Image: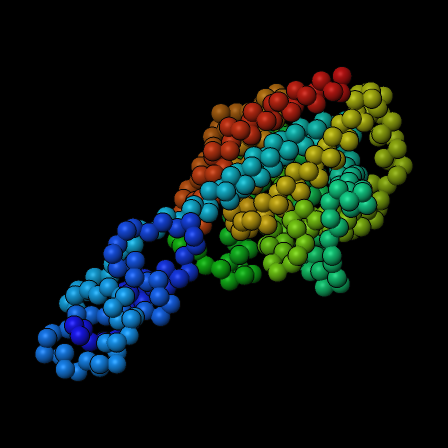
Length: 420
């Protein structure tokens, strides 16, 4: 009658696809052409010149579909824009990860304080590390038996995949504990703030990942700041320094292996770390007995209880419980983010640990030592800016930092009152 059928326009095809697949909650702008898409098989039409009317089929003209579809000018090349309001699905994810990070940091600060108190009175890091893993394993076994948490469904392949993760976790845990038994908590965490450098190095050499040039350049202040803090440390100890460095490398491997092992698995981050703790406990126990031994532990325990009193037992329980909790929450975070983002989260967490430990333990620090720590943290900021993948995580962590400090000091006052 008036129009002839031409090939379907890509813009109208796209509009039809949106119309059919859009949820009921989506709102469309009131364009006349959209009203006519009620028929399941519409015919998009173009207006044709009058001389082509003879080519139009009479049978087609009798179809209702032809007259129910709105037409637009043939020479119109721009697609029709439809206003669609899509809910921000990332907002809930941001809040969730933010809570994970804040809780993770707060638990870690409390753990470091009690862990250092225990090591000052009982300088046996192998037993301290073993007790932390044993406590977490027991907590999870009880939660599975009482059905407070669903037990994971695992197979032999899962445990095979978990083994290298457990090896790296055991080495990193023991090395960090050895470091904190020899040097101040602040110094250990200043050195461990260089973890992103190890993460980039391992990812580049072993995984073949490539990074932009600004990422590599951002590692220079991280390395330089850690080096400056090390050479100006008042109570420098080589064993403590090497323990922190080994812990950095081991935990980077652990994060990478964990992320690979968690892909495609039905085991949640919480249960994944529970299984990891149990396997690490089996690995570390024979070495702890061989390196230190029950006789040394018994003598050291009696000495600590006689000097500190019953509070020492509370310190041991607190550091063991909080070690498991902060690692459990960190694995719940790792289930949502990448290993590199996890490393930056670890580094930002150390700001709170360093500040809190200096205040609580009255750690002497030189201005040049503080400058080295500041440079290392600044390098982490530059690193996060250089790597686009980490920008979201870094901004989120900064927003959660104020909440973290508030939770930390509240919890610490509660625990100090509980032990008295």
